[in-house]
Image 1: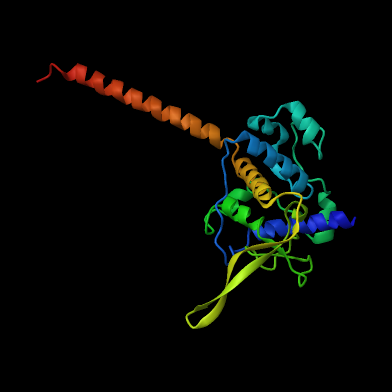
Image 2: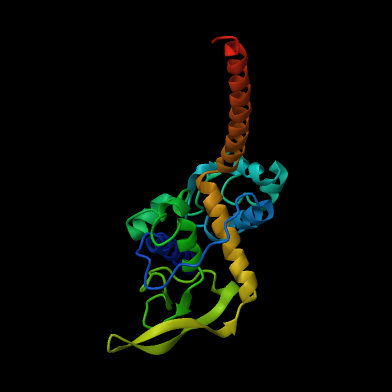
Amino acid sequence: MKKILISIVAALGFVAGAHASGGGIALDKAPVKTNDLVSLQNGAKLFVNYCLNCHSAAFMRFNRLKDIGLTDQQIKDNLLFTTEKVGETMKAAIDPKQAKDWFGANPPDLTVIARSRAGAGGSGADYLYTYLRTYYPDETKATGWNNLVFPSVGMPHVLWELQGKREPQYESREEHGHEVHVFKGWKQITPGTMTPAQYDQAIGDLVNYLQWMGEPAQNTRVRVGVWVLLFLSVLTLFAWRLNAAFWKDVK
């Protein structure tokens, strides 16, 4: 029960953080590449294991993951934890009625979360990528965690075992006659199961998947658009030459 409660708090905090202001640090550029199938597959695995416990993706069906190179059998064997049919939508593992009774609201849907933050000092993917990598322990907070992108965040660091514990490092500077503390980097307190580079890559894969999930047809749309432009270019050339042939004898 305690684990479920922590997961719910994390879920609610995740979306609250995703809709908060960009905080006081610059957003890192997310390594989004929605045609990288290996990255998308790993991101889907992370999403199902760490996000789908509390959040739904009501506009995404499991069988849509075939678009990123997975077979029905792979989806059934590795990703179906909240339903038994690959044609079902991605539902949260928690009972929505229980979530509402406990917290007064259901954890919001994450289908288009990466698109909802676009324009806030960077893309929505940039925000999520930075947000999920800037947690640090803070004993003054109820969850024991804080975040540089979203100060006083209500969501605990649910991925801390992967990343380990880090604390931000600051340097003092004088600006306009006042001393200010400027963030300059991180100090690793305890190691995680992943190296810093591996963790950054994992978060990049997760954010890449969230970006793709917001518009699964985007790559197809781009490919079709390129072919349409090529077709129109060739058609224009033929039309121009045909027009010249029709009017060549007209004085």
